[in-house]
Length: 337
Image (cartoon, rainbow, N blue to C red; front, side):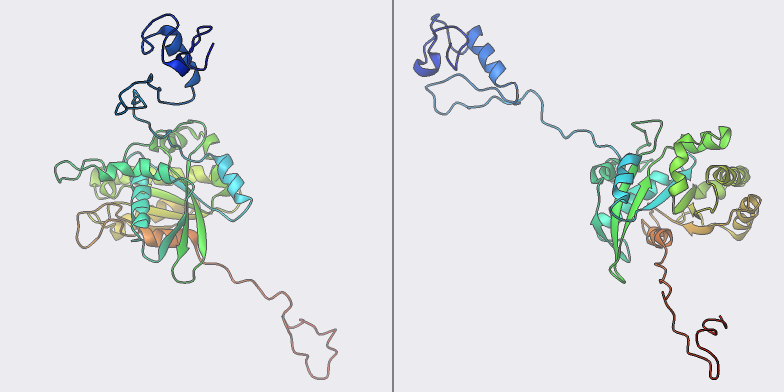
């Protein structure tokens, strides 16, 4: 058996002639040998030919494609936390409230160096960002689509998927790492309805929580009160999930370009959340916009800044206290503090 054929004694690889006087291009023994030898490649080698212009490799049956990208699981975020501080963000809200739109718009701003005060530093989930942002690139003859982002579907219904983004602040050059979960709105509805909180264990490690509310619903008199009531119920559920000190709470109102939140609505939300001893900061945003006054991505830079906060100055380890005249310095040390 030669390297070119499985038939014993065949020298087709050296002479180009088949021992069984068959066509080398169609001989089953030779084709089987090539199939076995080329099992690790996507291409098949053609039989020797006198025509030097003939292609050496056959085209693959299908175009090669990238493997499906997925978000990072909680274990991957925990591994990253061992080497540096990660700001974990909780993102909750009803379906189509604008959670994924905020993430897609944030990614597009960062990738185009348009996020005011911030620049891109690194990411471990760029392909996952691309997946959620691809809907924003689809236009129908110059007209925007009805839905800018795809509906979030989880690879694992039992645990959240995270997007990672490292940003550098222009003002002082410091870098921050954000772990941003892209959760379906059905998870939030289930949490409100049945208090199923197993999938929200990561909120116990969250530095900040975004409660995303659709600004169009808040502008609708018939649906406004229902949305505010659900927001209060969600705040109450968070009280049950998170033990001890609550993380900072940011109420993110989308569609700021169309419907600015009025004072009466804000007062109702404040009253509803205060029933659960929960307090919040209001962050109006417009992930996508046709309004010239509010460009696409309005408010997202401020949202990032509010999420990471400011670095706290370390206290003086051993403060100097001048001695009081006529007293023992040792006995009076820090007595007046």
